[in-house]
Length: 91
Image (cartoon, rainbow, N blue to C red; front, side):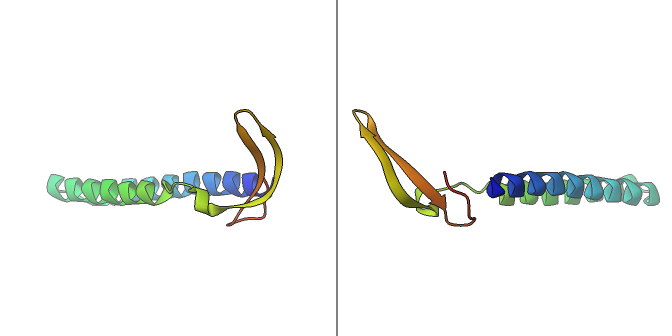
């Protein structure tokens, strides 16, 4: 349960940071007078947002989990209890 709450807090924080960066861009655009400078700032903002999204899209791999115990075995496979290595939650 702790991992889910950490995920929610991170998602909310990320949303706030996106808003802060967007507001910062808007204030910079108001201060700039030439269209070329505005276009440059928009490109820089787009590139930084793209990098932020790329960093957020980390995939969870099987090596990120540790098997705690096998709960049961059936015809289609095993049911296992896992522990995520990066936090204390069990799945």
